[in-house]
Image (cartoon, rainbow, N blue to C red):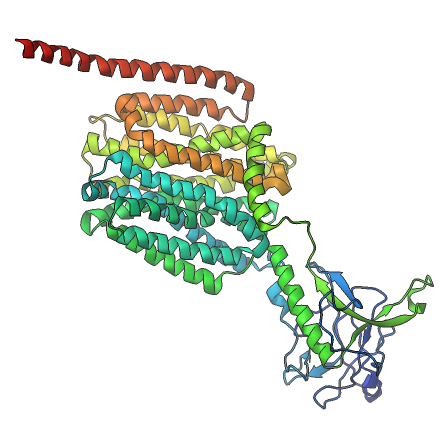
Length: 628
């Protein structure tokens, strides 16, 4: 016979004989407790006027409730010193009270005559690792949709740039500050919200983030000033950041390490697809409707996704689920005690070696989730800022890998400005056509997602020992990351008006494959290397990644104009080549980067002097004409 809650290994069984029914006057039941010596203690022989069919067991016995026993006290640790608190895990076997009733469905259950409620449905509190495949896929899908919208919001703004310049009379650099404000919120908000989600759970943070995300996007749509747009973009970035960063934690919550690569690949795919989809759709909207509908459409999509999260998303944080499970069980046990069921007979001492001969006494029990020494939330937030910075300063692995992925991420955000600049000046593209160029990011992301899933299987098959190490995440990335500098050189030297537009478009796809491989490899490598400190290591690279991504859009126009498209592509490609060697030889990189910095300074100074010479000559000629 099955129970309404999770069935222990020794299930409650019913007896068919009338003699056993008569023995049920003492409510003898076979049930497993958290202690091998624990026995059920109950005062009632039946509930709701119906006899109970139970099976007698020599392991567990039921004692009558002492007349002087008080069962009405509260269930707090401070007020009830006689309560035994048991640490609850997902594997803890839950003892049940023997006051069993037979329902019309034939399912044994426990019902309190006082509250009229049955036991809590513990299926709501199972470990996320044990969820069905369908539930995991659904939760991951909702999280990935939210991540895609976060990336969509980052890229869609670029298609409104020309309209904002006309509406408010600001420069291209001033408009690009909107990208920077988004990235600043994107980088700093997780430092506060990530530790909060570890204590209070992912669900509440997701709902809050979705609400903030929606309101910020609404602000972008209705604002009448440049300053209002900047403030709204910061709010949008703060809300969107949760879906772009904490979703990685959700993947770790529901998938074991061996199964995580495919899930992480799908999460990364959603980020890159959103990056390309934003400009693609927004370019069409800006040309055929109005730039404000770029943000209205986002708000509608974000609102629908937030509704999905509110009604269908399930909590994935294990410690939070255990806390809720303990609270539900304790509330139920309290209601049974108030109804006269005291609980379990527990060994009172260790006077004999034979557990069955030890004297028993009534014992009330309660559960608590595994206790961890946690800081207060303000201290956790302070630590979440301090510790990543400490890792950056003291751990060379974190520093160099953060620098590697930061450069790649900055190139991704630089494309929001550089693609429009190149294709407008060289090929006369409209916003809709420029948005179509961004589809190369989507196509390249889909291709590499398939590659990353397949190559993981190759590593497991042919290098099983390597696959279980953090370094196993880097072997393919060492090769695939070279697509980034190749794509940068390719993009720069194909940016001529007499070269077909498909050539630099393919170069963007090459860059995307390189960025994708770096992003996925660094995330998995740091998570596998730092284990319990993985969130801090990832926060460190996330902070560097978003700070650099916020700076690059501000210097894009200046770099591509002053250094020419070919010079800018060569400079960025050269840096990309150096950083591609991060997994190989760090010391060599340090020396070469110093040389590159010196070369950059020389190039900039030379270029500035060359730009100043014609101006000085023009001034001299003008002065001579005035004298004449």
